[in-house]
Image (cartoon, rainbow, N blue to C red; front, side, top):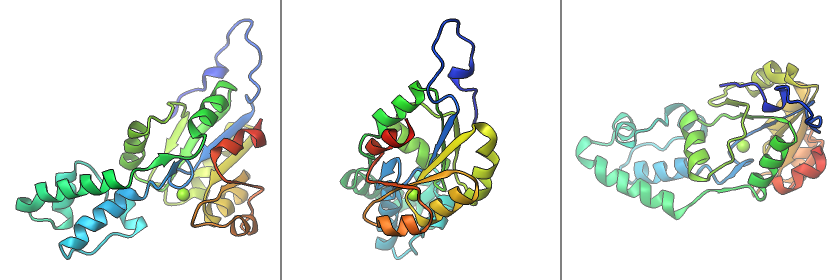
Length: 219
Ligand SMILES: [Mg+2]
């Protein structure tokens, strides 16, 4: 989904937006939302208890579709067991709450206010992104949202002409490589899984510990 950025609408007497030439695209899990993998973890607890094979990251992003009852049915949970399974899933989700990256809400609001084009390019399913967007009250700042992206390089390349200056913010070495190859300034967010050196050697121009550090780089 795309809509023209508010800052491109003519408004008499308004000062030029500071970031009118800048686009910032974000990975979702591990970048905007920390521990967003909890939905998969919760689902896998439910499946494992029933002797059903658990889902890897790629398979999860393809097969995870709400509503839950239908999801469980497709994955092999008998109908009679569906409400117990749903209760367990809810319990696991409540135990492992996701949260926004430190300073994410403030950073996104400030970038949007300054006129930057903001987008999501993520392998997560649209349902998972919407779920987080709602449950974590992520500011509604997005000019574009690309979910279930199998090839980030291709998607980034397609968006690249949008603005003269472009950043991609992600948390994996592959994010950094795709960003760099598609002509973006790669910004790496470190977490428990990726070390700063790993992101730097994959091409990260900047490595930050959370989105609270992003504004200083871009502004
Ligand atoms: Mg990620």
